[in-house]
Length: 434
Image: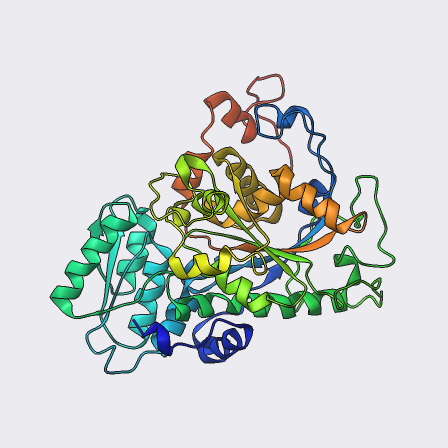
């Protein structure tokens, strides 16, 4: 990979330069909103729902949040990773790329690098854990890469990468631990920033800071049903916003998933000194919350071995991302959520927003909905007005079979959900218009 000492400095202007360089290779993914999820986030959790959690016995927080979802599941290859891969290859010379590229990845960076390599007509060698999902393996091969399998830990993957480099002389393009990758991933924050401003300029009631938004009984600033709005599709309504410390339509906070930390650190760099606070989210299952634990211990955790359903986050934070994530001036906090909370959040996105995402994508939303420490921070810092929160949905590379397995229920409950039996459990054929 490019010599770190010769890369652009990790600052906002460098992210802007990266964005100009990769625009031709990426989609500007939409920013969507959903009133139902705003409603759910803006009422306290029940006392019962906190039983058995670290927050049992606490008074539930009562924040107000309006969400703006950056939908990287609509990105090329189905996830944000094409941003970093494209930028990394753009910064390498033809001579450096002559023997192709190699990396290790559980799926999304694998597909991204395979596509970026195919675009430049060079070979790609991808080391993937044997437990990678079949759809991600097929996608990587579909872009023309040679897939080599390994164990699931980062140490096992890296050992196989070294063997591939000896055999092919390919150049390593790491999934997250390099400035060029970090700067590329951060470009989504620049887009989101401008898209949200445009949305709120056209329809101020999307923001919690709207001066004349109607307040409904459930505490939300909306009275209509679900809405999902592209940044180019909102209608102008002429309403103005209340004055706040932020400019018109500026996000109060952004929360993003964290695995190796390339995306989160890139977003933090892009939004540093903009009055938008940045937070990170992880799964807690089997020690997947290495950033949370590392911050508590004041040192980076270098090894993670977890089978969390958020398979894109089964890796420790890299050394360079850690230098940013551990800086409180850049990332204000890290939070972790359970497998059940991830599934609950994913169900809401699937059923309420009608958007297909993978489990890794929704850990940030799960934090907003279920983590009382985060919710209390929003309440304390924002008061009654609340926050506009950008939520990164990082990818959608899953399958119908995988989703069905995650939400498998008993036959009777499934029949009721499909409308095959009535409320009384009896199966009757009725002529009812849809």
